[in-house]
Image 1: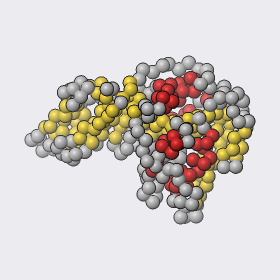
Image 2: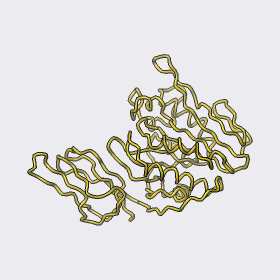
Image 3: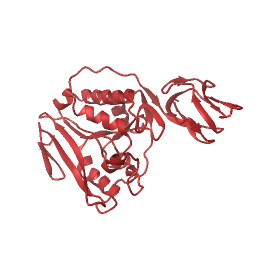
Image 4: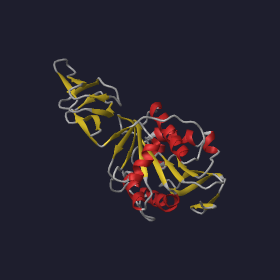
Length: 315
């Protein structure tokens, strides 16, 4: 463990709790945005874990998870190691409650970034330069997209045992085998041997307290497994999902869901129905396999081909 770590020229000594700024970015209005980073350090050596949220500006559940986490008494008085917590990575999109940056880019497709690139590319570059080299591993918090509600889940690559070990210690209800995508923080950090897992829970612009509580408890379990905190935190049963697929609408109309998010369903179970708004037709949606429901489209009006129900299979 380093006696002093440095983030963009700002030093944080062992035993110190400090909020620093990742960097400052100029907007077209000549105003500046800053990305605050909470650093909590014990005097005793241990792992350095990053908890980050707000990669997309409308994903509020992760922001709330980290807000509560950095104010948790056990975390504030860390027994060993270091926590680097970034409640809102994408400050400018958070201001407008949008997923994308003002130029239409998805920040989580801008990695590894560039010092002289677009706003998203600069933010990605600063994360890769100032934060990723300091950490041992991390968890990045997300939610479902517009009107998509994800059951609390953590995503990692099962082919890498270290990824799976971190996921099991976090122990979200669902652990999903999820391959890397180009341009993401997770993939670029993996190239530097810094495992980043993705937690998904709830939907955008809506607090989901089950997901918030699962996210906080997962972080606490992860820290306890490394003796960073000493509190009692109950174990959580989890299911490993090795493949997944979406059920899509075979007709347009009003979508009614009959099963609960997170439920285990059997093949041919009735999951929902699509009704013609004028009352003439009803299409039943049956489960094609034994599976867990890992995500639901909450939009009441759907068109043929829309993704409705996300299923995850154990084998």
